[in-house]
Amino acid sequence: MKFPELKRKTYANNMGVTGWAYAGRYGFERYMYTLQRITGLGVLLYLSMHLLVTGQKIDQTRWEWVMDLVTKNVLPIGEFLVFVAAVFHALNGIRLLLTHFGFLMAKPARPIYPFTVAALKQRWAVYLVFVVTTVVVGYGAYEFFLIAQH
Image 1 (cartoon, helix red, strand yellow):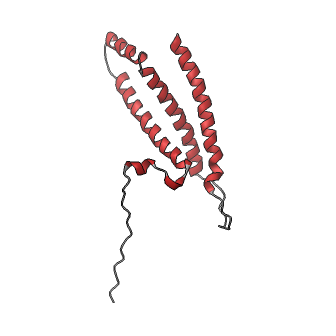
Image 2 (image 1 turned 90 degrees about the horizontal axis):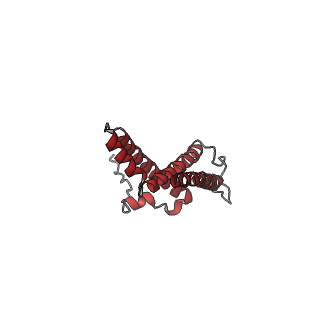
Image 3 (image 1 turned 180 degrees about the horizontal axis):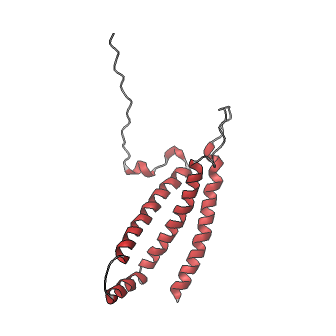
């Protein structure tokens, strides 16, 4: 007896990188995850550039020239943006870990109508991440621009 060959259902990836960033019907938490990826890549890029610059064995005059370049013009604003990305990445990472281990998810229950959405059980944590990030970044901005004036 010969069995018919089953064809696997495949879906074309027509969206490319847009599909990576587009949350579609998944909701706000998916955008938070995408922002987590972007800030992680940004912090990693900054770390590699930072290690490259500070690891150079250069003479004192060249080092002062590099530090003068870093402390003036647009680079301090970029440094502040790295601070913002690092704060958000750390706080949202804690939220993602707690969600992943099930602490912020709803308890399993029978699917009885009306259904409850499990993602809404963690929505308060998303808002908490935004509030704490805003407070920490606000204090950091105060310190950063206070030091920058002197």
